[in-house]
Length: 124
Image (tube, rainbow, N blue to C red):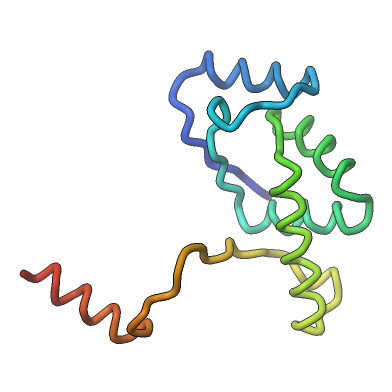
């Protein structure tokens, strides 16, 4: 179905984060580890948020996954989902995956020339 990948190492930290999520407390950036959601889970969260709102999606998936899901994550996947529906001319049932957006600056030289330069530099 769906899965998530976490970079937490200790069980104690995971238990603390579950307690924060269940208590409804905000988790600060320094104490929260970055989660990587699968493409299927991203699409599922986005569909639910589009139908029921961001707040309800945060609460539902926080209880299902056992840790706090940031509202910004829900907001961003919902935006990506709606964009996919608009530009892809697809029905909501056809969108089953949402890929993670590329971040950072685009290569100055273009993708093909940049990859050639990177290969050359690694050979040195």
